[in-house]
Length: 136
Image (cartoon, rainbow, N blue to C red; front, top):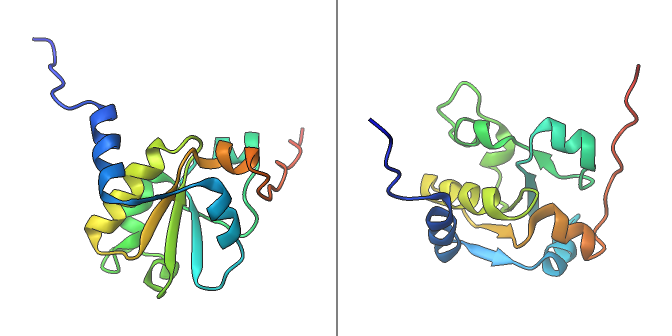
């Protein structure tokens, strides 16, 4: 029997965007380096290798998010226990909307995500560490 998807990714992203704060890249650039803000890059390692990274951003792949946020998880990362603002981003702003909504549902606050993600960050002139040259 074929699967019937009743709620697609577009609806899920729209719902997430309606529930979490979405900030423009230019505003996020202004938050970069502040002690009270953690930029959370949820892109996977291949994206970081290929496209570079935001200096000082904390990398948490989307697949580990819930486990790293939850203090009862054996995978918990102390950065998520800090009394800070968490600003999520991905490559284009869809996965980070879902991640920020999930983090907010788990009780992390305050959270936001960057509209347009890393692509918008770069286009707006945000700092980027170039990918390391591949060895071999």
